Image 1 (cartoon, rainbow, N blue to C red):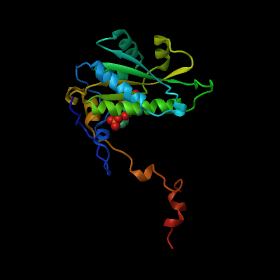
Image 2 (image 1 turned 90 degrees about the horizontal axis):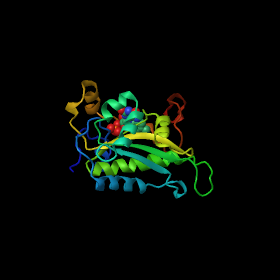
Image 3 (image 1 turned 60 degrees about the horizontal axis):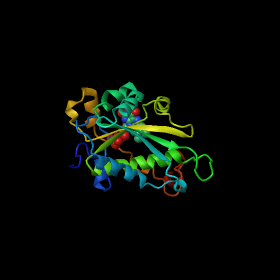
Length: 210
Ligand SMILES: Cc1cc2nc3c(=O)[nH]c(=O)nc-3n(C[C@H](O)[C@H](O)[C@H](O)COP(=O)(O)O)c2cc1C
């Protein structure tokens, strides 16, 4: 499948093209995701590093074509504002973190960090295959826990859609505007602090008038 070239991210520095092509669409094509591609994106997730090599990520997956009951359970756990567009995606997923280390049973403070890394890696592999995911905090972890019987030492982290992107023109006005609005990122100086935490402007002796 060809790369998605809708609303590609433009940055001041050159990065891998696939990173600029990854985006979070709300329009999806009415096209199932082949099993091979699904296996590839979850294999990519498993390639992520993790604290103690714990691999604390788990993924609850529902496909409209093959596991409709799970798909409906995930859809039912989404906030209404997400359901409205997410129901167009052929695959719905909930990421889940194992919150304890397997080697000693202690709490794993990095579990959700590592799940995030796995999902980010999955998203990039997906973009390379022409697929896009859209992550959602707007879902009910309690509903997922109840619907799927998630054990107590696991916690649902986020939901996401997965599929081939569709035509933004098919979206309602408000969503179409968000889909095509320029994608903005902070300049590096706002989040890369070489040498130390930045001082408030007025306290910076290096910028004080002499
Ligand atoms: C953890 C997480 C939660 C998010 N929750 C939602 C959500 O509930 N609904 C939604 O429409 N977008 C959600 N997003 C998507 C972000 O708004 C989107 O990633 C961000 O605006 C950057 O856009 P891009 O992914 O296209 O670069 C979420 C993203 C992340 C990573």
